[in-house]
Length: 218
Figure 1 (cartoon, rainbow, N blue to C red):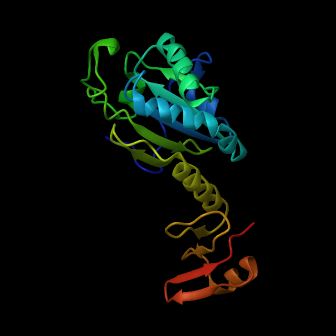
Figure 2: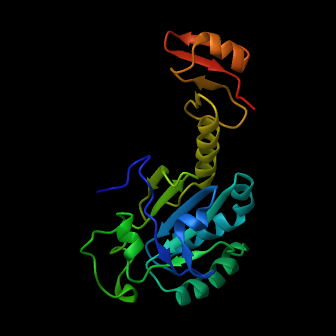
């Protein structure tokens, strides 16, 4: 069964380019961005890993760790990192999980349980569903998941924007409207009374009987 929002992200132990990790322990008390790739040495993913390397500080500011995964070996990951730096100018400092037995890919339902074969002999098309982004919270619950086709590079600015919303709405009784960015007005949830809205948020605007907006808290 596919992982759903608010499901507990499966825990696992795996080798990475930074040594062995136990996933939940590695996450700690912050957020994690787990993003997967169908195969090492693929063109679109090379641009993506480089972009994430360049954005690592922005995610760190939000108490979020980055970790990549593909169903290839640690040795191949290290070789690929050199290509990524050469092309993008960004050095991959976050860990990359080696998953040659496809255990994590299957655990996260990115590959069917019956998938088999030597990773080096599998093509990107064989692994095309291993192209997902998971945002996982400090409570180890899945907060967001997005799966992209192989030919469409991922928009990690959107992942960053979504993370801002996830963190804000976890702390306050608000939601964010379509296209929201930091500093924009937010929506009050149904669990906030008008009295509480005035007390906690300093007032609000009633746009519709069921839609109240206020300034972003904090």
